[in-house]
Image 1 (cartoon, rainbow, N blue to C red):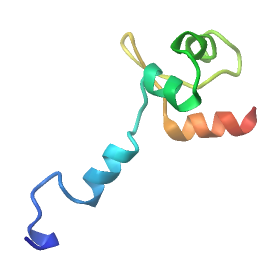
Image 2 (image 1 turned 60 degrees about the vertical axis):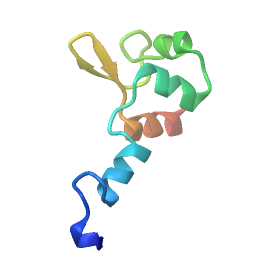
Image 3 (image 1 turned 180 degrees about the vertical axis):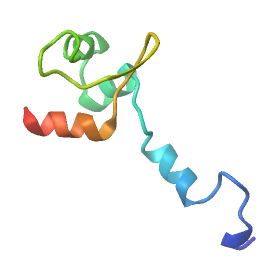
Length: 75
C-alpha cells in the first residue's frame, strides 16, 4: 500500500499526535517533570501565582506542552 493509499489515521500526522499530544493530564505532566501528581497540583497557576498555565474543561485540567515548556524556561 503506497502512502497515498494509507488508511485514515495511519499517516504521519497520526504518528505525531501519538508522540506529542496537544494537551497533557496532570499525571502525564508529573511523569514528564518527574514529580508527584500532588506537587504538580500545588504548582498550578490557580494555586500558585506564576505557576504552570492550565486549561479547564469543566472540572478537567489540561496543560499545553508548549506552555509548560515556556513556563519551565522562565523558572
